[in-house]
Image (cartoon, rainbow, N blue to C red; front, side, top):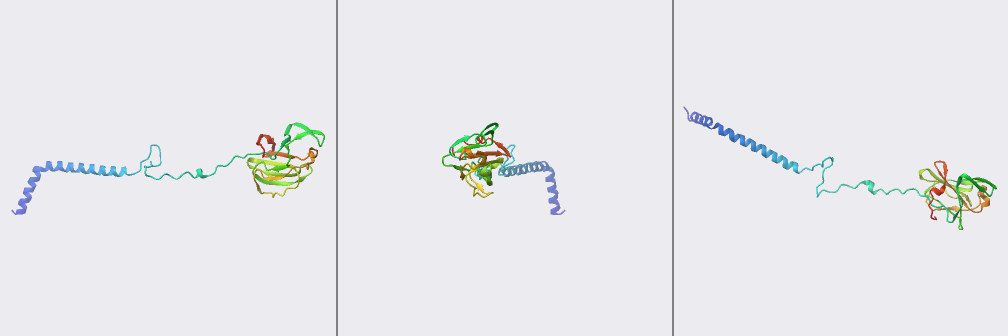
Length: 217
């Protein structure tokens, strides 16, 4: 029998006698390998951002940059529409649609669809920001200007001194001087120099005093 055969026979006998111990060592090694892989996986997961409960966005770490601000925060807020008195002075005749008032020119009672203002300087101002819609003259209204505003509002300035030089379609700012008072309004010519001011919304005449600011222009 050769030396190699003898050595293999002895090794086989050794393995039979100690097989139980080899199995134990193999099991211990396998368990150790599994534990090592689990620890490595957990360490890798700890480095990833976590999600807050019920939230779809990652929780920021102390050193993380802040998210960009909402763009809407930089947009200027739109100012609400407001109307100011179209003249410095006092009110001569109030708006009256439900009841008739005495008309000096016609010497009869009639409805009054606006507010009449008088003042020493005779100045007439735009009551609010808007766009010039119409200018002109007729016997009843005299020289007049019509301005369109937001939210369906429209203001009318009648009994002006002369035809306006404003261009139809041009923008106009609140407080802009747009004319002078006179008695050019045919159905109120005997009242004297004044401004007949009307306010309309969505095609219907409304009382200007419900929206006009109480202070002077």
